[in-house]
Length: 421
Image 1: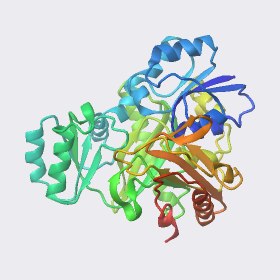
Image 2 (image 1 turned 135 degrees about the horizontal axis):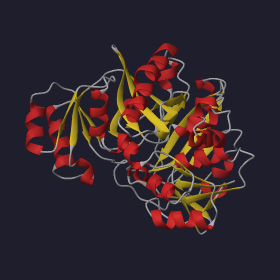
Image 3 (image 1 turned 120 degrees about the vertical axis):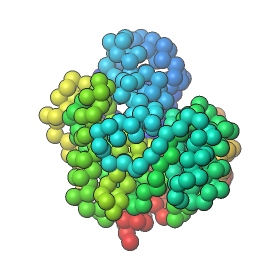
């Protein structure tokens, strides 16, 4: 088979790495890809939102399957475009991807179907939102309604922080049109957990859970990022909590989407928080998480292509999906200044000093310049250590991460520490 993976980040590199293990695949293309995907696939210089060019390329190359990585093209209807061209594609249609594309849609869906989430109100007017905000207890959470590259969420501990976050979102348009509407919701306390699931309508096959680290600095300090590291499994979280999350949140949400005439096919990602009242929903994403994918897929023992194809032909419930007992820890190496503005184009040294037996190196924001791999994004690389337990995987990840250098490199030093306390 010939497969086209759409995207340019660490998630797409990890998906391609997993697909390469399938004996059924002859060739993989990645549009537009990065310096890492170029080692495993043929990069194609077409952007994720250039639907017409992507469909034309898939036709010309007789692509057998398209896999969509990022949120923006899904929200814009890329799956509908490929389906209209009769090209097999893995991912949710536009009306199903709205579960990520609009936080207001997602929250209203959960409220309608009594699925556990934080109390909230939604606003389209700054003055009304500001007046409501002044009456709420602190801390409080302010979220831009639309897609904001994982950064449109502010957890505010003082009235000043809350006022600033609301004004930046709704008045200054820090996140563009994504901030035209906002969700203001109660702050929930507890450990966070990510559960990704292969979903086809009301069939839900949950993956092994992971835990992300959103804040840029150690001890969960600083502004939110797209994710500074992850690990899987979660030995410190009871299986009963994981099962409760799947049965009371993910499965009911999949059924709710079917009831709403928006059946979901693809990867449904639940961002959860384990409160004293049980697990509650923070967010849903309509695709593989980044950097969760980088620790979940290395633990998948079943052929990923078989899972994609089973979802498309309606036989997902019949496939036997197996997971390794091995642990995986991903440490993200980021550019100086991220998640704010940051320079690009610095040479990355030491990539040749890490073998795949020691750690997996998934490229996120990289490019090739005159034969040299250089930085080309905020999150540059995801270094994934594997081992018999979290402690060993963590050691392997950090040892490999130390061997790789570039100007301004920053990373957290406490990824997966919560699992070892």
